[in-house]
Structures are given as C-alpha cells and as structure tokens.
Length: 321
Ligand SMILES: Cc1cc2nc3c(=O)[nH]c(=O)nc-3n(C[C@H](O)[C@H](O)[C@H](O)COP(=O)(O)OP(=O)(O)OC[C@H]3O[C@@H](n4cnc5c(N)ncnc54)[C@H](O)[C@@H]3O)c2cc1C
Image (cartoon, rainbow, N blue to C red; front, top):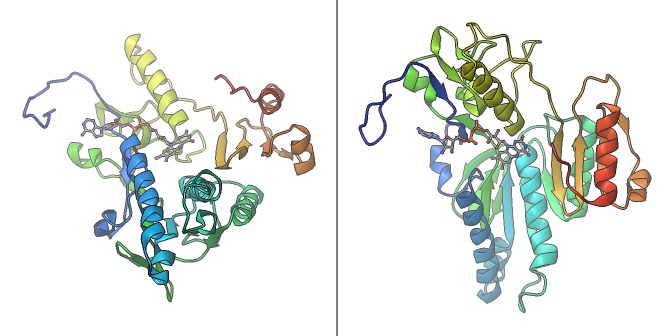
C-alpha cells in the first residue's frame, strides 16, 4: 500500500474501511453549487450558507432577489434530505424568527426535491407518508417525481420548472470511495467492493472491506445498508476474528438490525425497531401524545426493545446500546 506521502506500507492482511462520499452521478460540476453533508466541515459550510442567504435577504432591496435568497432547495428525499429540510424549516421558523427586522424568516421557502414517487423509499410507505405530511405542516414544499435537470449557484431546473434558490443542498446520492479501483476489482452497486460472507474481498483473501465501502450481503442475499450500525458490527466481527487468528474462512457475519430512525424535526421522529417479528404494531398519534412526545413509533421488534423505546419517550433519556 502506498500513502499519499509516497511511503510504502507492506501488509500481511489489509482492511479497507474508507467509507463513502456524495455522488453527483454524471454531474460532478454540481458539487460546487450544491454542497452535500458528510462531515462536520460540510455541516458548518451548509449552516453558514443558509445564514448568509438570510443576512443578504435582510439587506437587499430587490424583492425578486429577496425571494431567491429566502428559498432553500434540498435535493434528495431520503433520510438525509428529510432531516435537512425539516431542520432548515425549523431554523427559519423558530430559531431565527426574531433575529431579523426586514424579513420574516418563518416565510422562507424550503423545497425538498425528490426524483422518485415518494420520500424515504427505504422505509415503509406509511412512515414515509407521515414524514411527508409533517414536513408539509412545517412549511416545506415537497416535489415528487421531480428529477433535477440542471443546477447552478443560483437556480435549479426541475422538470419544466426553474427554481431560483439562495442555497441548494445535495442529499441525492452516495458513492463508495474508489477503493475498488485501487485494488483492481469490479465495483458493485454505488462503487462498493463485493465481499464474501467473512468480509474478505472476493478473489483476494488477504484484503477485507467493511462499512460503507463494502458490498456485503445478508443471509437472504440482500445488500447490507450503508449504515453506522452495519459498519460497527462488521468492524467488531472482523476485529474479533483477526485477533483470535481464527481459521479461514471465518464463520459468516450475521448482521442484526437494531432498527432505524428518521428525524423530521424537534421532538419529531419515527423509530423503526429491528427484529424479525412479521407484523408491525403502530402506535396511534393519540397514544404517542399520551407519552408526551410528538413522535410516531412503529414497533416491530422484540418486546424488550418496545419497552425500552416507550421508556425513552416517557423519560426523554436516550437509549443506551
Ligand atoms: C448525513 C448522514 C446521516 C447519517 N445518519 C445515519 C444514521 O442515523 N444511522 C446510521 O446508522 N448511519 C447513518 N449514516 C451513515 C453512517 O454515517 C455511515 O454508514 C458510517 O459512517 C460508515 O462508516 P465507515 O467507517 O464505513 O465510513 P466513514 O465513517 O465514512 O469513515 C471512513 C473514513 O475513511 C477515511 N478515508 C477515506 N479515504 C481514505 C484514504 N484514501 N486513506 C485514508 N483514509 C481514508 C475518511 O476520511 C473517513 O474518516 C449517516 C450518514 C450521513 C452522511
């Protein structure tokens, strides 16, 4: 292995865990106009862009320019886009509402643009519909079936429509770091490295790949999602196997989903617990309000997990893994 400094690092076994980054598909030039969120530095950049727009809107005397600066577009209706649109709408509606004299930040136009027919395609439809409704109630305009055709620093073209926007945030695509290319294997979906059940790279038993850069399959042949809990379990599994010098091939990784959350706004999220119970029990909103938290919880996990989540909602104390 050769580092950027030129240093050569010999290895017996190599573990690749170089993660993923944003993908602008065939439009890398859109990256400058629409930052994505991956790192703390990205988050700071996005926050300063949104604040800059409001500050310029405060001083401009051109009504059309003011409207543009008070429009924020979020591209991509997955979990990141939903969370981002909700957070910006709440920032405008609550946090900044008293900070300006000439503009009403609560009237900011947050537009969430999704190419597909619904939000949150990786999650059950009723939870996606709930998120959609709550975003709408927060004042977010959700555009479905609306692939972005063109994007520049001050506008987007979506279908036949042009949207003038002060800030555009990219949450529409993720691609693995180019590790497949480094080691000369054919990449799978989203550029990920196909791995065997023991996380070794297929055809390269001395190299392992874990986390977002790896394309590992569960016992039903379904790709494991690009989630922290997958990366963490893979890291622990491989660390144990390597530390114990277990005979090869290692017994296959068994991934256990601990559930998923989508945060829509303040005190507003849904939690889909893990587990293999075939039917889902959904709390009604009234039941949730009884728990004194504005959340929508779909419980399809083990009873113990259900009880822990109910306790969390009651006490407001976070769950410990
Ligand atoms: C906005 C957002 C929200 C998310 N929310 C959730 C969530 O709620 N729940 C959840 O489970 N997951 C969530 N995820 C996904 C989660 O962050 C990833 O699945 C997880 O970080 C993957 O871990 P990893 O170690 O594979 O990669 P990363 O955490 O990306 O780490 C890879 C590391 O490798 C380094 N690296 C890259 N290239 C090189 C190189 N050439 N040489 C050396 N180092 C290199 C990078 O700098 C980075 O530090 C979210 C991701 C994003 C972006």
